[in-house]
Length: 236
Image (cartoon, rainbow, N blue to C red; front, side):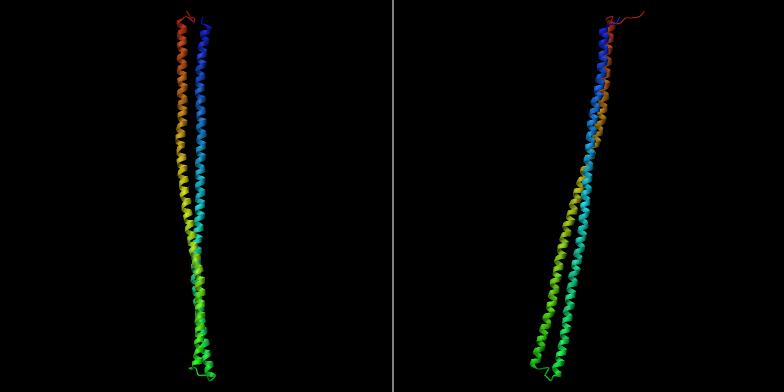
C-alpha cells in the first residue's frame, strides 16, 4: 500500500511545477504588456513628430505665399516709380509748351503795341518768362523724382521683406525634415520592440518547458524512490 505522505509529496511536487509554469506565463504576459505600452508610446511619439512636421510645412507655405506677395508689391512699387517719372516729364513738357505759347503771345502783343520786340526791355521780360518757365519745369521733375524715390524705397523694403519670408520658409522646411527624420528614427524602434515581444514569448515557453521537465523529473524520481522502498503495492 502506498504511503499517503509520499503520495502527497508527489502531488505537491506536481502542483509546484504547475505553479512555476503559470508564474512563467504570468511574467511573460507582464513583460508583453510593458512592451506593448512602450510600443504605444513610440507610435504616439512618431505621430507627434509627423504632426509637427506638417505644422512646419504649413508655416513654410504661408511664408512662401507672403514672399510672393512681397515681390508682387515690389514690382508694383517699381511700376509706380516709373509712372511717377513719366508723369513728371509729361508735366514738365506741358509747362514748357505753355511757356513757349505764352512767350509767343507776348511777342505778338509787344509788336502790336508798337514796342520794339528787339528792345532791351522787351527782351528782359521774355527772359524772365523763360526763367520762370524753366523753374516750373524743374519743380515738376523734382516733385516726380521725389515721388518716384518714395516708391523705390517701398520696392526695396518689399524685396527685403520677401527675403525674410523666404528665409523663414527655408528654416521651417528644415525643421520639417528634422521632424520627419525623428519620426523615422522613432518608428525604427518598433521593430526592436516587436522582437522583444517575440523574445518574451520564447522565454516564457522555455521557462514553462523547463518547469514541466523539472516537475516531470521530480515526480519520476519520487515515484521511483517510492516504488523502490515498497511504497506502492504491486499486483499479482
